[in-house]
Image (cartoon, rainbow, N blue to C red; front, side, top):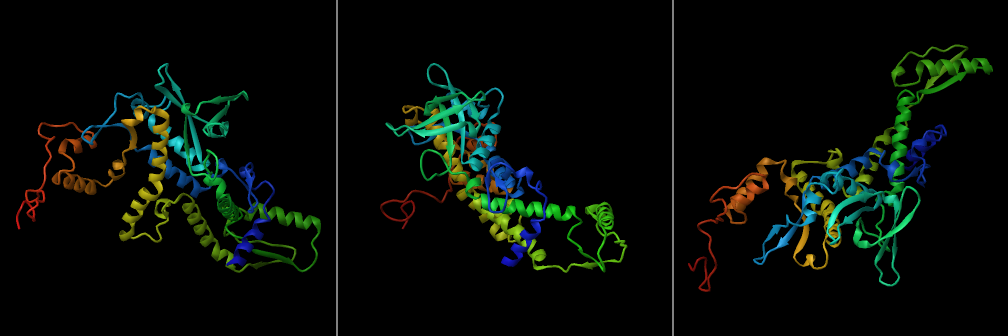
Length: 403
């Protein structure tokens, strides 16, 4: 296997100096190209993984809730943040687009930032996403709080209070910033980019290096130039693949045999897709690799995506919103939470069965279910129900006192 990998890279060494110009800028990798958050997004697997996470978070509603005395809760529609998170954080960005772009920056750069503009009483008026590269985070030596410095387009650097910056971050080893998944896994992403470029160049040259041209004697410079021009014009490119080769001057053609590198190439590309899925903990089925998917494990993989992949990012969002949009007094009765019920909306049958079970066992009443479905309430729909044969346990033993 190792020999096949080496063989592919030897073939790749024949590329022109400008073959990877589109990947210039970033941190150099051992595969010979530079990777940063922008160039990594040109790798299909990376783009798909980031898109899945960002678009999934974008479609989930997040609102402030108020704790009630009876242990229940209600939506705090009177709080200013409710409109910011349901209508839009500012006049030119809707709520879903804000969550989409903030999450995309978070899962690639490890950090995403938004400036929170407030009124005279300290209530949030709008949120404006910041370019991740324009923000620097330091630690206050006295309080150990984060200090935020933003550099504008003119190069002016200003410090902002931590309460005015909505900061989403992944885990980090030190300080107040998260680690970038792209930079931590740049070698794996760089190898995927090399394989992608090699495949494109391979088909651009006519699907595969066909063989070797041999001449009985030494060819003149003019003969070599004419032969090269003829081959390039008539036989190079996917559109010319399969044409009959016409040779002159005693030149013969010896075809190449299929090598182990050729047979391992597809396997290598699949492995790199699995590597990329591993970076963001994305099930391969969501990246359209259905090789090992069955009816038995498809549902389990979906639940795994929600529990181990999506929920950690939702917790990051909720924590950042709580500490930035709520003051210390408000946090005693208010909190933010995502509504993940929307993830089940695509499966109508499963959703209706879950609703019916919840109503039958008194978990929700019909009006609450209708609210989930964006439908109006009806008189009598506020009544909770439970099975007739169910009741509280008593001290005499048995259900409802029956032995």
